Length: 475
Picture 1 (cartoon, one colour):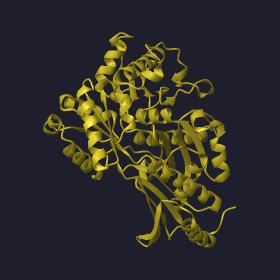
Picture 2 (picture 1 turned 60 degrees about the vertical axis):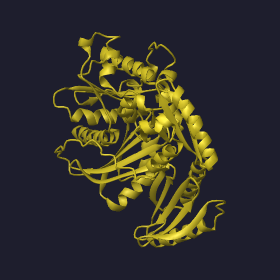
Picture 3 (picture 1 turned 90 degrees about the vertical axis):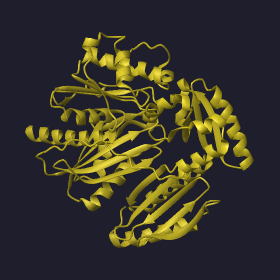
Picture 4 (picture 1 turned 180 degrees about the horizontal axis):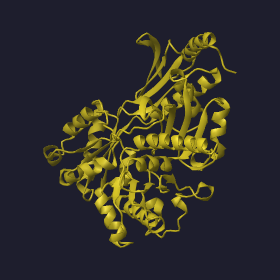
């Protein structure tokens, strides 16, 4: 049962007071202001959280920032519909506050060619922070193990002798600070200077990442479309959303969760409708097997779940479509290519050994029977080791990506191959690996994709427009 505006304002105030009356244990809670809005600030040794209650539209905004690396661990905003719903989000917020605080130790990984000299330095650093009573932990690995081990650390320090690999390592770990230790510090095993360097780096405000700008297109479609793109990494689920009209961006936002559920998608739609009540259609790009609005993704708890039907029951006035995430990215890539009529995109996210592929041929997505096309996990490929193990390392991930791209060449033969895999930073090295399995003359241009957010949202918007036009054409 939903509430009217008068009751909603009252219940927002009640909800704020209810939060203050809860037993928060060791978490400090203070009341403050963000502009004219009431805010509750939560503080632990490892995390700072905030809940803002916006007066003008009854929006409640939750956020959690990790103190040790300034990463945003949780972020969402929603309009209060039911107290049960709001309490559920508060409980998720508190669970993540406790989880971040439990992992407040700053973990730093050192790496050199063999791991020997950095192992000794790591021991000295651990002795130093123990004496100084600092919550730091240092480890060391050989460079060839860095791609696998590094994802579990808050910072990576390279020895000077492998400093030439800095750009490569940063491209692999684009969410983790990576530095080369100055020779003067490393040569003397200067514990104090190293700790000062780490503190200075972690407390610096992170520069905004400049996203790859897509070319401006003129699309003759003046109705508003809400595009939602779901992208998972090894830590979080990022739900990006954007309102388009004539290919122009009217609204852009993001929510960050540990896991995906249907409530999150509905919250986004409710929130967007507050500002753009004339939304015409909603398109969602999501990971998993998508079949006529149903989604299967065992890792996320979706077992042929009627996602489109659920959202349609909440918003019967809107049109909905659900697409596979890699198909949406491929659609976004395809519309920007003037010189080819087929493009394939292969996606192997960090922490996964199961990739997926999307292919556009003559402006149409190849979906296949039961929409199984592109589920490359079912390809009977032979690898040198377990692909789950290979995908963790640079050399192994290169083999996995190369063999899947060659399979796409042999079965579809696209004019452009694209991929995303952070453990495969070099296109040239990937092409050389592919040439082990297929003559080089058959390998089309290969391009590494960096900005998945732009392509999944843009592609989902394009797919929505095509779907709407197809429906009108068949009427």
